[in-house]
Length: 222
Figure 1 (cartoon, helix red, strand yellow):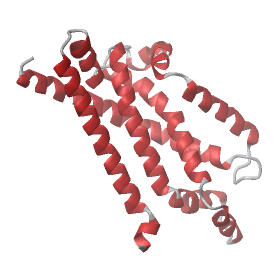
Figure 2 (cartoon, helix red, strand yellow; figure 1 turned 30 degrees about the vertical axis):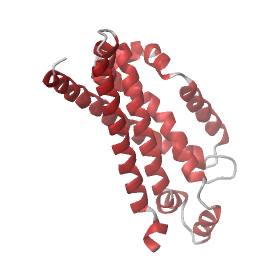
Figure 3 (cartoon, helix red, strand yellow; figure 1 turned 90 degrees about the vertical axis):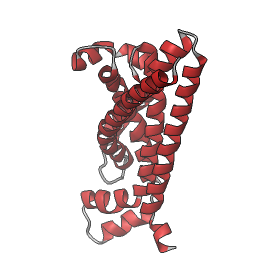
Figure 4 (tube, helix red, strand yellow; figure 1 turned 45 degrees about the horizontal axis):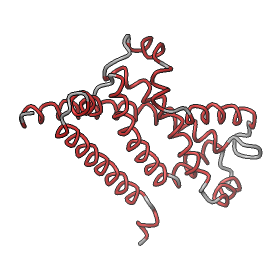
């Protein structure tokens, strides 16, 4: 393949991948964040005690997380068609990517919040803070670096998922690698796709690590 044609295809596919990852990441994290907070604060004796709801939502999240992504893509094709009017292409791929993001990010947020010292919560309660004030001014504030790292991990996973949807006509770098690198036996295309994906993951990971360090109060004190 001519270098200029390969560069053009790579750029177009990269833009599709970035679009899928950005939209799915934003929507999925917006929905997943409150779910994660609820899972971390709704157990017995916690800020918003609702153990039954906690157990039900936890089961749903676990079921969604345990479903292999490629199976999820196929299983929700009717829903994808309902939302986007099609089951192939970049916009159609955003639907399963978003659904996969929500439980993944929710569990990471839950873990980040549960790592916070319980003494801070008790101290806030003793000072008369309401449960919502504790969530926003204590839990989310203290867990911010961990949540940023969780979002970074989510975005990195989304990049991998976005490559997988190429196998079912989802567009992006994965689709380019399969159509040209695999089906048309062009190893140079496959190699270029792999290199671009590695660079993209490295950039996202580095940016997330830097943001997490900048919001970490311990680093500010030092």
